[in-house]
Image 1: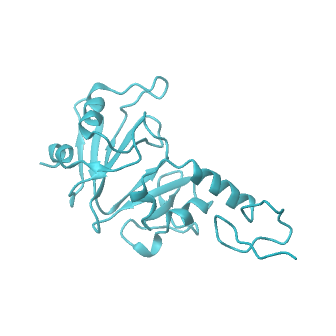
Image 2 (image 1 turned 60 degrees about the vertical axis):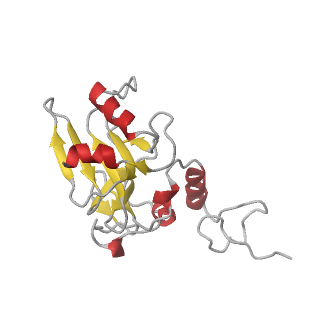
Length: 199
């Protein structure tokens, strides 16, 4: 006699045709579970219901493929829900004033062929210390994640045309899960680094 089983990913009922050892109810759930098992994202991010999908043009989307807002929590989802959605081309995390999670966005600082950082960006990454850093969707930028008190975002244009952006609320950041180097999956205190850009 068959016992009732549930999908490991979506927690829905397994189909009657599922083989005995199956853990997921569909190919979509199997792929999502596989991706999640390889996840390098900090738990401080994945346990917050502030996830959206993103379009190719970086417009935030709900998991139902409708426009989302970086200031409207009703359009956000759990990490699990956003990961399982096929809307858009990827994930995004919303920064909110309910906590002190921040992102420092470094534009055009990484050579995608060699992996070498521009000296100015290497100095910022070094100053950030032991924290989660990922390669941006463009492949030539970095997102440095951590904690600091940032109520007003700031964009600093460098003399060479590159930019450093610091955000803590009212924005969403496109996520790739592509860890830079051997950085850990934790969020460090970036207050000292952020103060250099927001002073």
